[in-house]
Image 1: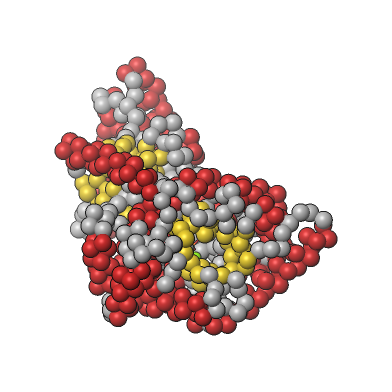
Image 2: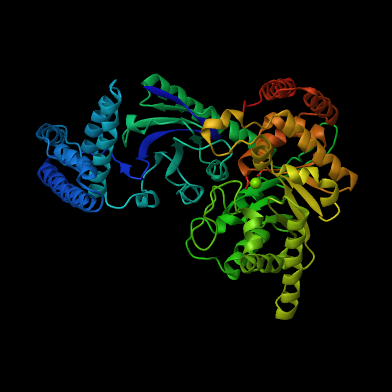
Length: 580
Ligand code: PEP
Ligand code: MG
């Protein structure tokens, strides 16, 4: 049994068999071969060795020709390993005696060798472990064919253990079979994490390297509540977690009783609880939980997961589906927020820097793309209450440009004669510190604000939201963030402007009292968090929340604030589930 601590990003517990993808996306299977297939599997291994040898020789010759023989020497070393009789005998025996599949035997045996080299004192020999990993990859590539594809062809329930999953790969996971996932890299507020929560798949990210210690088919426990991952758990641990899964199911059942009661504090203040979605298919889940509307629809996911450029009709259909599913409730549709970790190949952003060409900047540089989206939005607005929201606004100039383009689109639509509505509220995300500083001006030019703490934390604290190495510095309880939220709410109040908060922070029960106490009356949360947040709302008075917020604002460090908020929550809701 081996335990790993990662970052819990999507709640829930899952116990199941591992489906392992290494950092090139190769699946490492555990597959035993039938007794009568042993000879043909040995042949397959033989052919894989021959093909790998041929490829390696060809690489060696190319490198020798283009760079010189000294650079080609490394491939000679690889060829030597491929020709090593002991290695082959060991692999053959694994297949013949233990009935391992060639893939499993290759990954098992070569990873063991790599580990031995890695642990050697000499850095020269330790480096050789990379060569062994390289050979393993090349053999697997030949044996397994194309990587990643199998992910979309799952036929039985698995837990995915991977070096990384991009937000679009996560979005494409088949919920019927993916019980949970763990990635070696990734941070608390990356979009992979957000999508996992949206899809309600238990997930842990940022564990650091462990894939060498696990094989496909091993039993694994993923605890998306605590961030713990247990490899090859013992019987007692399995029993304990199976019990926990059952408890969790019961807890959810109980929470469902909150469906039809209002999100109202003990002293009668009604809070608007909205849902965050990435896909139209999530809208019905929000409605099932009786939300007051959609507070954030991240439309960029229309692009992620497809290479083709979505046209106006694709946009329109997606928006129309959401608006109709919400049966008259308001839907805040955010314009494209591509870029950073949400990369898209087809003509969009390939700029992965959070400070680069992302979000509204990309839309303003690509006016035809932006107009296509805005046309579809205004057309969908004819079907229900649509609000348009611009992301990552950092200057008045950007906001004005975006609004001007929207006005142009209105003119175009008038000419086209297509049904549309110009009766839409236009708002902006507050997720860049410059926007908070300039809010007295912004509030004169928008109809509403929505605070995006995921980015606001990243840009205020200069901490990459998707990087596990600085995840401990990324905090929703930082005093600087609390002040920025407070400033935003005060600026909105002065103009009587609606303001909500749609960052992940709003879905964590730890912060509900703080946010209500600071004056928020609208929270937009992942659908999975709706009931938990409603339960807190129904257990507190506004007075209690105000006192909590006032005290938190006087405190100096994130850890103390967080502990204080957790204690306050325990006072009003002793059985509160300890969340992230
Ligand atoms: C945010 O930044 O808080 C937000 C809601 O937007 P996203 O997570 O999509 O960047
Ligand atoms: Mg954001």
